[in-house]
Length: 244
Ligand SMILES: C[S@@+](CC[C@H](N)C(=O)[O-])C[C@H]1O[C@@H](n2cnc3c(N)ncnc32)[C@H](O)[C@@H]1O
Image (cartoon, rainbow, N blue to C red; front, side, top):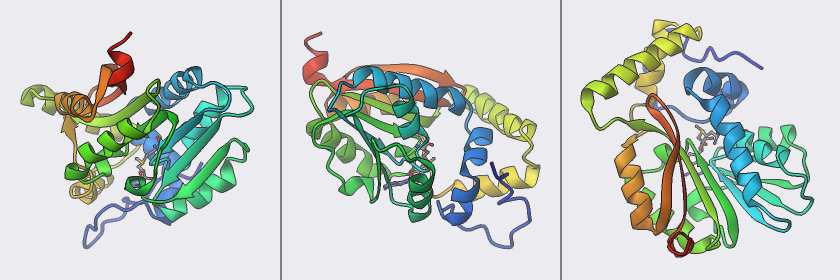
């Protein structure tokens, strides 16, 4: 696994973060050292998704990057006719995902997730991607996913979240930065990456996530994981949630 050193040298101008070839080349190391709980969230989402799938079912991994979640789902099921479609709009990510994941049940598509129909999806996963979607596009996206997916479907959403209580938020935020330094990132790397993400990664509170999921038509909403300012939610289309 190549080591992430993208922000190790002082840059004269910090440009907005992009999921380009440089990032794709070091992505597994970058995300493992930057997102607390990533190494728990991915295998458990894979397990929850796989348990929800029957033969012939479709799952979508939206914002799949190198396909870690797609792989985690497929590793947890022996069913021969399940299909997992990984969608990402970064060509470098999709190119690498296609090389690295050769399971015939996986398919990778380079597209904007706003443009992809998820008709009949039994499982949809949005792992650490909604935070990169324009804030005003988040509710319409979730409404469409809720309408298009199967009524017995499962949605999994993992995100960085802002704690509603400012002092608590700051405590988690500072601890997160200390954790990154403990993982080998220098002060310069931490601050340059933070600046680079400022305009592209816009974080909502846990309450906003839960309210928006409900407004989009989901019910049975639960936060199943939390580590400081990182959380993961599950939800199901309301029609089913109301009857169980
Ligand atoms: C933090 S990464 C997601 C990591 C991945 N889900 C995982 O758990 O390993 C965010 C990904 O979302 C993709 N992305 C951001 N906006 C997107 C959009 N509108 N359509 C498709 N992919 C998008 C980026 O290219 C990037 O690969």
